[in-house]
Image (cartoon, rainbow, N blue to C red; front, side, top):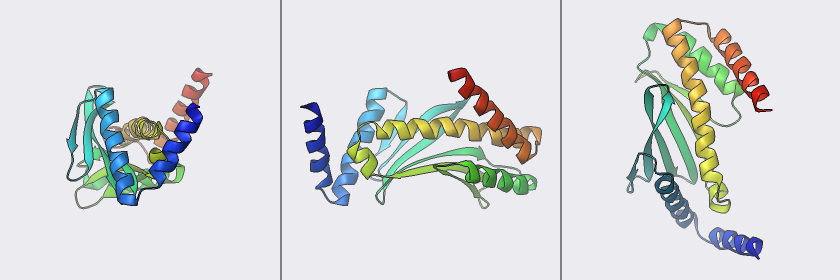
Length: 180
């Protein structure tokens, strides 16, 4: 009976136009933030939520969650105000990440000198599947911590991008072994 109710709810949600679907997902996102009791701000007019999460030890960062143009967007700055002399290595490291990432993109702003990590999914996924917003949010958060770590290592230790990526892949492999 529960499966039938869930199916009918999905069909009902699909019957709405794109604008109404975005509003439903927006309400689900607000509800998720409130239930999780995360420190956040809701901006109704612009349809985005700003949440503060710890991206590294003793370092909080602002994460933005946006419903726009038929997508659920997640974004966070992973490097703010990078040194201009590191620009080439920053682009190389971003390119390495963009080649490795299945979901999301690392963008470099040459005007404002920052690097951000973005993900987006079609709103139909969270519209139809209850846990999709939370899963996307957590996947974005976990990946952002690794990307932040890599860019901090580049800027602070002046490590080569290829070595940083190799070390990150090794670190992820070791974490996977520990889970088993």
